[in-house]
Image 1 (tube, rainbow, N blue to C red):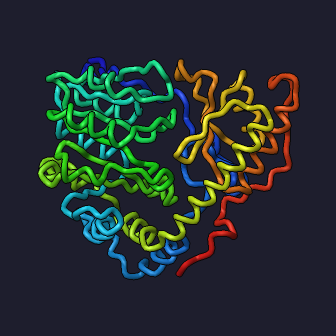
Image 2: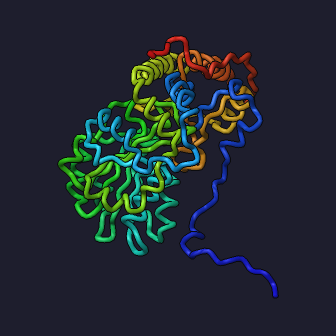
Image 3: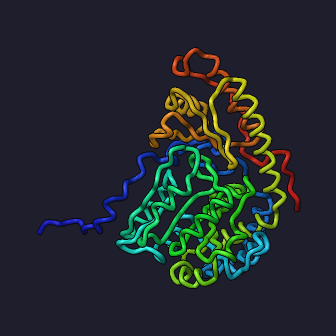
Length: 388
């Protein structure tokens, strides 16, 4: 009798495997010899307090026991940090596990979720895996969110609306007035605002949660707190929502070490603020120099900028040869001529600008390849001294 594979659920077949492995690019390279600007991660190491707390706790940790599934200590610190009631906060081990808890709570076959364009792949795949449909309206202006176009897609089948603010591909932002309009129009759907870049832009919808029970805000420690390796994520929403979400989500909480790391990161907010200041210094450097060099670019309120060029493939490969990795947006039709670049510290930005200057001096970006004597520092910058 011949062996046969077990047939997958029909809707799973609609999920495509990733075409590009960003991890493979840096495989085999020594950590401190390359500059990773393709995933909007922090370009420095976490606060020294994070390392110290993990080291101090190591001997007393009971790693043979499961972690605190309610993340009580972390949620307490997050309550102080966000000014939100601890009962309105839930913690997760990653963005995908948070999406999974939301999707399995609110969606089923026949239901719909609206996602801001370009659609976040993790969210889209979670929705499809539930047998639900993703609706993503495109906007007349690629770099502007049209709330009315989004509300026009809301139907009786809509149960989730997911929008990143800022958008992780275009950097587009919604105003508080636009968010309120959306919340007022979406009474039968949970509106999830992704604030992964909150520490950089300083704009938040958290204060609206007491007024709108159909609002949820999601944030991560992977960006400004430099803890992408732990992937800690937290959700803020009405306590009544969490009663249902937590039925599925408690087992997806951060592990023991991740909770300690996140708690320590909150205890050293001055370190994070210092890093944000460095990013803002780099933004000023980039604006001045990219204009001088004649580049067409879009700065965002997050920790990345977009560069519009004639040959993004060539630029991506040239930087890769110099051990600098950026995100080529060629897979998004409206962004075919753009690359997305994470903003590093001023010293790291100087390395990037050096290569961009040499490329700009050529008649065509594809006529020559540039090699540069890179001096990249991925460690804690001297400007960020320990506070403890």
